[in-house]
Image (tube, rainbow, N blue to C red):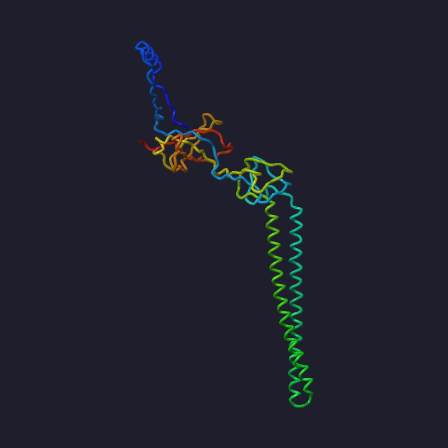
Length: 307
């Protein structure tokens, strides 16, 4: 939005007279010099812009699929965590069920492994006791050396069985960890088929309908936080130096003629538009605008500091 150029009063007559005189002298028309429009007489800085949302999100799924549910429409208010839409869930829910069964099986395997370990330990202790008695009796000559050796070998086997059973317990624990990790993965994939609101918002656009094929990242819904609605206005860079954050502003919407709204400068861009030679200024409403239409044209008058 370039500054408006106004032709000075009486310029048309001067130009016409100049052209006629130049023709009489055999010369071409002389160039016309335009002048910048004066700033508002009350010293305020003018800006033209549109209604926008500071916090606006285009929501989509992380996975591909077919849209099986869409639970909201434009104009609906949603709360953080609310389910907005879903892709087809049947196949993934089946995978989750299988993973849950895998966890139960792994847990049962651990119970069985612990039971085997308990039995192996009991057998080891019993055979160790028998071996000790046999060795004592063999030293007294009450039992044969062969019997003592058999008892010792049997005790050693029982000790080895305990080691094997303990290893089985550790393997069963590892099986549970793997099963739980697989379940977490399948549940995460299932979650990716459900679209939820990331914050309290208003639905601005519903871009897909039931049965639509959705690609990862494709926009299904656009939402905005109503509390962040403001006007993005463009101010002549020659006047932008007078504008500061916090200055009072008057906002006029195209849809509400004659009904100015109060606001304040919320943010000033640090870079000018190199083509239009303007600076972008965001003006927030003192009272949240409701209802609002994004993209609506708005004018602002900022009570800037005097030059």
